[in-house]
Image 1 (cartoon, rainbow, N blue to C red):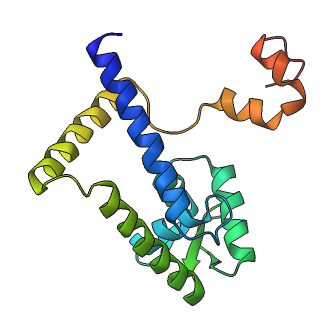
Image 2: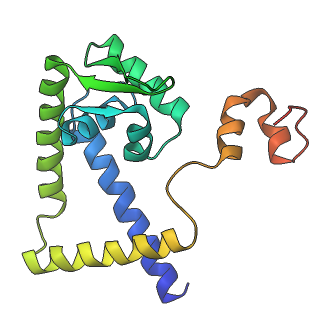
Length: 173
């Protein structure tokens, strides 16, 4: 294995373990994706349009809509129409949603501190700079963090997943 490949493998393992640490040590009261939605809204001072959420969460409109519905059922958010825009709506944190978002942010802060506890301030700055360079390189490759349409189709059409893999699907897409 080449040096860059070993480094990327170690980086991937570190990211995977970090994600597990956040999952294990974060609040357990969220349905999938709702925690990220609440954090995004909290960072944006309580409200974002559906289009802004697509960018903030790095997912498609349908995925955002599903997460917003889950958060609405838990009474963490409400939806308001945007004047002059037919297909745009604003997602707003409720008082309960703001409390839960603050709880999530605090839990995330504690986990981040534990994960990075062995690094000095200088090393943290270096790590952040290296991550920024990697992000730029990946984006220059045309990768923006959103899921590819074919990937989403395979998940919608589980019945035909083996045929999708063999490129023999009977579905119209």
